[in-house]
Image 1 (cartoon, rainbow, N blue to C red):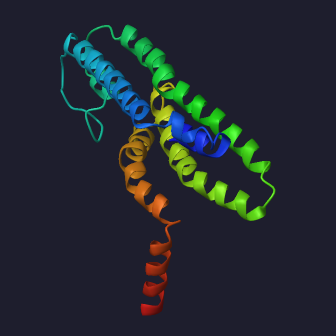
Image 2: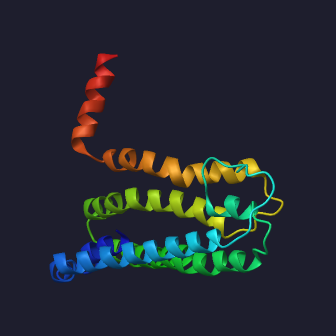
Length: 191
């Protein structure tokens, strides 16, 4: 999405030639294959561990780290794996998004008209809000050490990236919608 915004604002004349159907399909296939491969690798590694004791997960859902804590095997290599994969799957895309938005802001600031700047900023603000909520919480959950961290804090942060982000996503994106604004005005007059 940030790459799409980058192309639309920074390289508008090249947008249609770069964001064609073929490139979009290739991007989706690559992302799905990477996600499937990483999930499969983690599932296989969890299945190869030895589990003992109470099989109670102190979490809202069967996340990787809470299941890892149930194991009696040496899981230090899997914790290292979390940090390495976390960098490539979480931090690297976040850095790319931040860099693309830096270029977008620089391009927007070059726009001479105030209405043009405002329109460009409002186009990007929705996506940037969702990205900050999602990546902020997911980085806090997976890349910061969890030893000594409050269990409830980890649960709340997990709740944010799994439930709150998808819940807020349509709300954040519809706030700018003209039909939504009209409906809100009608409701306001109703009460």
